[in-house]
Length: 276
Length: 77
Image 1 (cartoon, chains in turn green, red):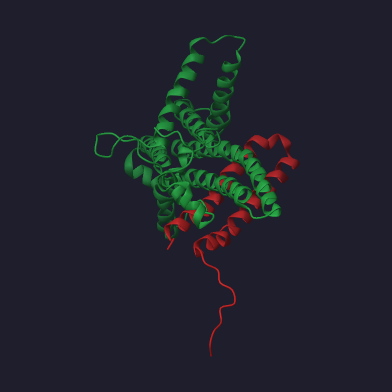
Image 2 (cartoon, chains in turn red, yellow):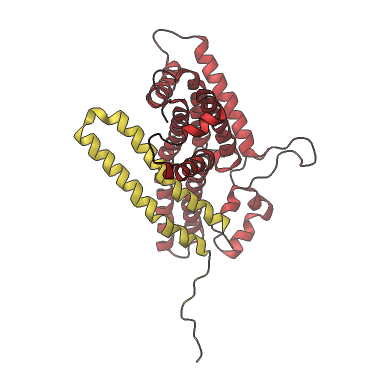
């Protein structure tokens, strides 16, 4: 496994090619990783996939270890786990879904929140420094789970396919408006919601990582290859701003994990609620 | 008549397009948080409820900007 932080095409082409042609702006190629294992065998991995699997193991062990020895006076680790659980359970699940129905969905929301948060923070953790969610496959799978869950809940709560489709149209509308409203709501429930849920997480992580690459690689290039003192000084400025942006990224990463979980809870609450 | 090229810019036009497309969602997100701050200032105890609404609204508005970002890469020539 390659532990290097730089992406595949640099390793293959070497850094000397970039030196000769001047500054190579980071682009979508910066997100391509070499395969671990061969593509002819039965398994291959990329580094993001490895990070996601490692995160599942780490989060699982952490919560199992904490849950194994709960005390009335919490240790530091128990406090962290309790804060995370309390946040998801009370602020997201109970407030959005409602006190009556939220309990079955807490495990799902808790898993989504911790997994996304952990993988997002990997984007600025030294030596990993790659948010796995900036590869579209991971958000798509998470969204698919949420998609199946909220439609299943909706179909069960609203007595089958016909009842579910009927419930899409809010009651009390004039007859001529109902087909239009049905079309819009159908589009929202089945296409726009999953699309935006996946793309939001993906886009934020991609844009954030790209921004950090621009500031840090650009700053490094100006500092090392700059022709005079003024250019080199602006390189230092770029690097310093890269550090500021790293902390901004931490905020965005937390916010995206929160928003993904919040919107999942919101969609589930729409499916659970009786009236609409 | 000969045309002389005075200045030339090369690069992806889609990046420029995304910059323009991000103006609208930017204003929208600004309006949402302005309303949220207003609401909390008027009624601090409603903070928890308003926070959820504000972030939901922000997520929906931001989706437009994110779609724009994806189209940058889709339509790249």
